[in-house]
Image 1: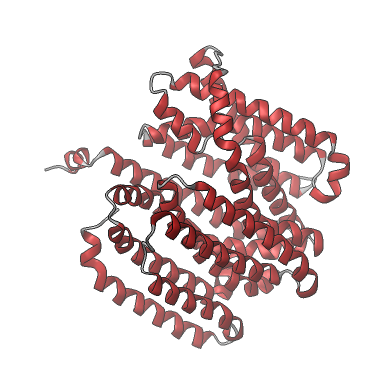
Image 2: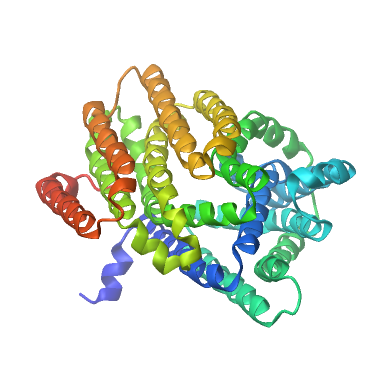
Length: 473
């Protein structure tokens, strides 16, 4: 049988998952690989300013676009199968209305807020343009994924991932003005052009018709989730904003490099979790929590091994990604990367909670963790420097994971996972994070420890290979 015929027999859902996995790895991998280029072309202060802009855009975007392309949009695709075009365009108009209202208020108070935000009018206007047009692309992608039309989605995702950093690179190389503006505008303007194309496409398909009756349900569905989305973004982004305010842009740049190193583990996990979610839902529907644990525990072990390896090889990774000026950032890597491991734990608990439609428990944990993180940063960053932000975030991610575990246990009346094993993994990884700062100067010891971790991982997966083969998500 030819390869083509074999591929035709593969279920459409599996092909879609594989294509989207590939697209995710490529797009996030390109962003990771371009970091060493920009850390060398920009000064630490300029790189820090870019990071601050990206953080504010992530925070403002949650409110300005109201996260309408998330779960509520999938509900609309299910509820209105014969009216998906008008639903998509109606959500786009609702998003635009909220964006205009949000930015109207923001710009009225901007002269007073400017010293806190640290961004000028040109960057704020650029941000507003992104928020107006980006939802058109987001809605199109969400619909394509819902309908398992993966080819066009993967091509557009990879294409945008190439064109944005390439244009930014050319702008930085050939500009005579601000390299910060060149980096930001160079990355965003070609994407805005793509978004406008999808905006026109959606409008023409329905000839501008808007169903206002769709707005109320979507608005009320997402309104209680906005604090959760904001808290998640704050927990990951408030560090950089507070470092910029309390220490300076150069320190923000150093801390951002540590976050870029941590993205190695995040890239792998985000791709794996996309396939893990439907498997978790299927087994929860069958009330087979043991199957969920049997598949998730080896994945969690793999993430722990990857995090430990990244922590131990921190100096080498920073040397590749940035210049010697950034080497101090290596000491932020252990807590930041360990925090990723507890983020992963949050997701495996939240996946189960979302299946049982109890998202408010997740919201309570994320809001509490975000508030605590801001308070701890305010206390410790001025006293201990920007490295302290990594440890405060690690503590908050740990507490969030613990809160989500107890929430999941309350909802399901079962621990679901082997928590003794999860606790052991957590203890080992935190121990690695706390000791690596003292052994960074001894590369031979680090390499031997890294080799031992990899041998352990190989033995573990050889032992579990048989059971995993029959329980693939």
